[in-house]
Length: 500
Image 1 (cartoon, helix red, strand yellow):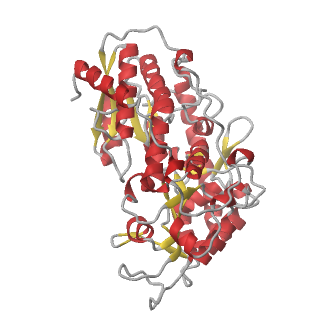
Image 2 (cartoon, rainbow, N blue to C red):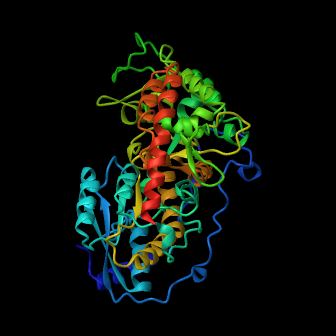
Image 3 (tube, one colour):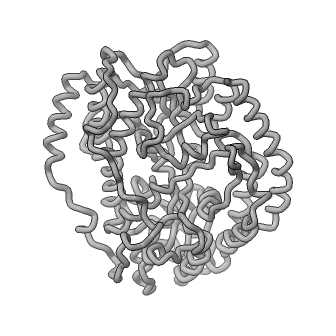
């Protein structure tokens, strides 16, 4: 399944020699909009903290030798044009692949372990792992499961509580600390983690793309300055999107793939989750004791946020917004990639794999805040992101934690910077985009209420309604959810007690 150890070592030597060659920086490729930029380092809360990665010698390596045993990673096949492999079979010249390959070699040589990855069909992940766990057979050392499947696996007591496993450096920055804190219930229950060893959680993170050519043609100041000046809000996005809408002689705003109209913004209904989270509006929160509760019924801003989102998504009559996610009418390949939208709400994977042939350069921004008083940006992750879990069938969870912790460390220091470069060279072509990616990376957020299966009574319908600019239903949706969500939370907490 994988190349031999000797061949791996020879290829790794060649890779290391190749990596000595200097890389051109993103800044050297220039930008399409010449503006006086504020120094990002002078602006609070616009970029993530500098990567304070320790020297490799300071990593708390374990004194272990696993005897070249096989370590089997359960993962899904790639989906939705995302990078989803945890390890690489061979060096192929693609920078991210080669960085992952090199990281794998480092782990294998340090701990004398043979990493092997099994990729199942996307739709079969939950069924396969449930069936395996029901037999008690120890096959997989670590399992990557969809966030929406974690709750099902937990309620059947098929997952280890990760706080019970000492070999994780669980508080270190190579693990997504925002996700860890959100997923921790009652202070000591945690069943999934995320790191850049699996890039789907990054590829599926939402941001706002903008077309530099269109912005320049209409005389728009660089949207980057909105972030630097703390004016990047949902209302400001709507104002700028209205400026970008141009009918260009088309008979109507109805999308025609052969037409020439330009929309202010293109996306589809999954944008709603991103905007809600970006405006610091959450379905569930936790109290001071770590007990989760349904937060929307207590929010003082949820109706204002919903109305402001609807003001954007409901502005279809003047071309400000178009929702398009079907064949021949797709927000990425048929609209934004064809220079027919000023803005696009989409996942990072679009810049990595779906905008390769776009003629105009583009930039990326974080999801806007609700208002300037909001302290931080929040970057929503794809609801089905694959998360690291350890099945209870695993005979040596400490070994699993040790191997995956080290692989996650190398992904953080070696793979993620290369991933930034990959996004940069694929069309952004400026230094500012790297600062924006750092902001997005440092503010990634997974809707953990989805992972625990609590919000099916409100989240899908709210997305559907707000996607067409309808916000007058939110009151009834919240009322219904306020009766159902607390009961589901209580059931989960009872499952926690049973799992002790």
